[in-house]
Length: 220
Ligand code: ADP
Ligand code: ADP
Image (cartoon, rainbow, N blue to C red; front, side, top):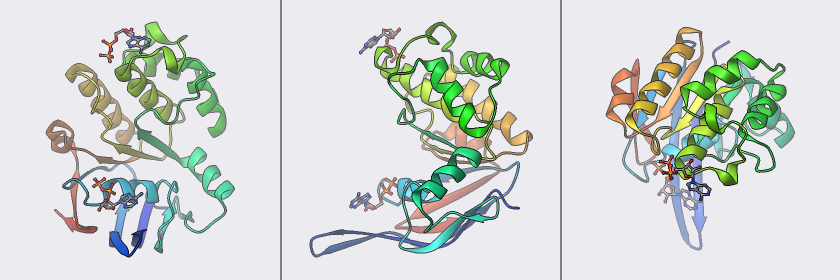
């Protein structure tokens, strides 16, 4: 099955009399082992698209399939289970539980997907440069550290699909390079990676560039 596929996605936002069409018929496929960068001006629909692909938001039209399974318009519990099993979401640090340490957050994410691998935890903490902070809680971390902890948690479950929204916006150049190398490694292992980014370093490494403008995809 294809890791990720979107069929004619539409998403409208309403504010009083005004209607914004954030997505206007977006279709795409991401294959196993593919690293795809998504670029586009601010307000073009990148975040809305990623949220729909992750099943965090529901499209008003069209649907999303993950590993051949329909995710859209299914009960939240079904979408949550599909997410936990197949999708890693790298978006700021929203995936951190504050009553758990960084390491415990990673273990929890792994347990959702089925197994805990101590070696993977050590390797990921080194990749994001957080080994010394593994026993800290999210509220004790700086903004940059929390962003890196969010990445480590998203990568913990070894998912088939990785979705990222500006994953390196808050990290230094060395950490960006380490994260990029790690993502490319995941691709070689068969993961499908889609990244919304303004970073030319990330975009330059992509196998394919997708451009979005006014809610429509322009394929390069
Ligand atoms: P990007 O991530 O490319 O900056 P977004 O997906 O955030 O774009 O936004 C796409 C369009 O949808 C923009 O016009 C934005 O103003 C609008 N939009 C996004 N989220 C909301 C919301 N919650 N309510 C109303 N309009 C929204
Ligand atoms: P970064 O460049 O990663 O954002 P900072 O320079 O902001 O890092 O932080 C350096 C150190 O200070 C880190 O070890 C961090 O844990 C600590 N620190 C920064 N801000 C806070 C905060 N609001 N609460 C607790 N610790 C903090």
